[in-house]
Length: 288
Image 1: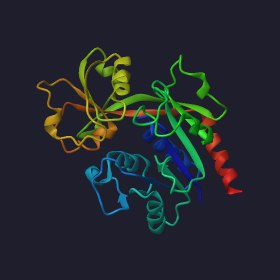
Image 2: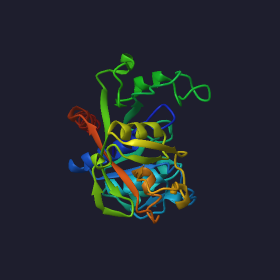
Image 3: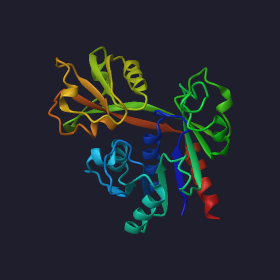
Image 4: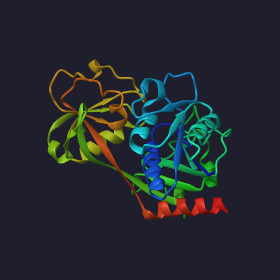
């Protein structure tokens, strides 16, 4: 059974989670029965592996796995030992015939058939030094070993040496907004154009989120929190009634808050058909 790892070689947010969700949905549409494993960063659970349901407590299972479960509707297990997570998932869901690993490129105890590395097209590799001197978990040469590179938001002046026949590009575009405590209420970003809003992001690269809102004409007061931050309602009370706009990753931890002025941005993950064709081609090769 094929295992696809979606990871990166640098710390900080590169866009793995939306790619996992988009790929899971695509593979399900192509008759794969997908299961997902993840470390569950930000969660405080200890009795691993833990199954993640759409109503799981994000403080136990982590915010990203919960968001993936809600949007992909795939079986998902979290824990520090990915191979154990896979075993637990297959024991409960024997019909699963493909595993996606959210992160885990450096988790070499887990066998894998396909590796997809996600690269931040703006920050790239920083000073190209390994931790703690730089942002890299592994040297840039590690990318020569992966099957696919996905560059998230490549800048026009970015280094050309990362582009190869196995390089594809991803764009994360803000699509629409829904009210935090009532998903049936929706708005478009243009409804907030020229308005001053509070931007809230507890993600790996919050500035990307603020920049995306600004590009849509919003006047953003930024509030960046630590990645996987556990919010209390008071954290989002800023002394006025200006709209608060947050990411979906943050929203899964704030759904119980009584904040009528809080809106959540849903993302449109844009990938080329060639990327999906490449994944299917690699899966076919692994089947032989």
